[in-house]
Length: 535
Image 1 (cartoon, rainbow, N blue to C red):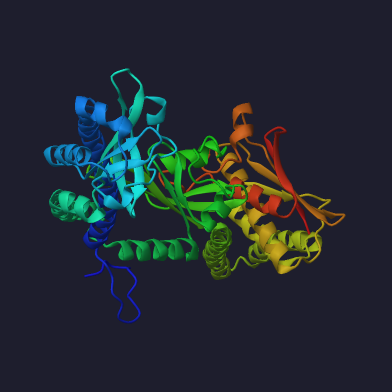
Image 2 (cartoon, rainbow, N blue to C red):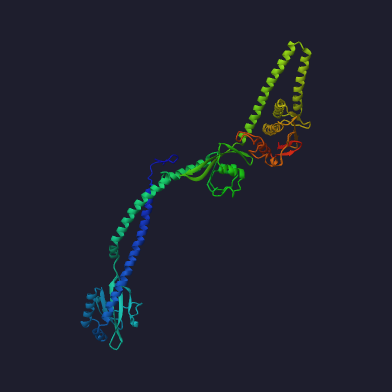
């Protein structure tokens, strides 16, 4: 049964199993080896024949050449004359069991031979040294057959060469050689096939155990589906080995982490991955959805360890880009804060109505007029002051809401006299709301424990650029915090909510830089944050 995710064959198609493929491969190897063994065996058989038959032929030729009667008769012998020479040649041939024996004169003409057609002809190979007085052994072609020949010179009683003796044997035919090696070859082939078959089955079982029982076609299909899935999902996927080397990464992960195209097989240090990102990819993650700022993107990390048979194989981390969602959460947070402010104002207005009702019942009409004038003047002055300088309704509403919340907390918020902002497009308004809202929230937290807390806000528009300045009279920012305060996850406040703190200022910088601006913090009788955004 194919594994889950494996491709289904389109139509009937014969497929070899893993064991079958191993067996076929081994049979092919056995055949190649067998051909080599046969060739080697044939060569060895021919070499053995040449060695053994060459010695026997040379020995028979030397024995005949040393015969005193031959040495006496040979100088005066003529072809086909006399019976002594043919008798001696036939005796040697029959006793030695060789194929032929011939006797030649000093001029090379055959005087007698086991092959009558050679009598009267010359049978001296070009490479033979017998005419030079030295024995020679070699092969030559006779009658279409390959013959092994030994030639030995014959000397008379005065040590003069008077002829030579040729003794030989036909080389065995191919059929004869194969008939000799066939039993051994067949036995080797049978044993090899049996061992190859058993080995193929055992090897395929071991491999299939390591591949979770899948056949090669299923593995190939699974890899293809994995590649399609890996590069088709919108989430980033990164696999890190235990040696800190990237073993797998898809296109989305390379985009989110700003990795080069050829990053697989390289360590995080070689890729110059930021330390915070490297820690997120290599350290345990106690809670899901760890947020981190990478460049100008808010990335959510989820890391899972991978192991097999107790062996650590590394980890797989999924990544999601939550930049837009995080900004939306900030905007929703501002909306919720405005809603809470309106609810608090409703409660405050109810208390004021109760106060007016009580004064009316007490017939303190002059006090009623004074109370209403005081409340009306305070509210109208706040609204008119902001509306006169801030023409964009979104930012004006945000400032009014934040001012009301700060007032309830006993914090005085003052809008700078030089503040001016025209109506903005929706996208710029949302970005400004995020930046100003975060800076005001941060300032209110900074002056919460300060006596006579106060915040000064200034929003100005010059040369296609909006500048927002928020200054508080808190204790300021230490030198160490000035370098870390815009880092994601860093916060000077305690929080039990993992990841709930430390993103306000990081998001502020993200929004500013996305609009070709930036945000800076300095100490100025407290903390002063200056944010710039291009329109």
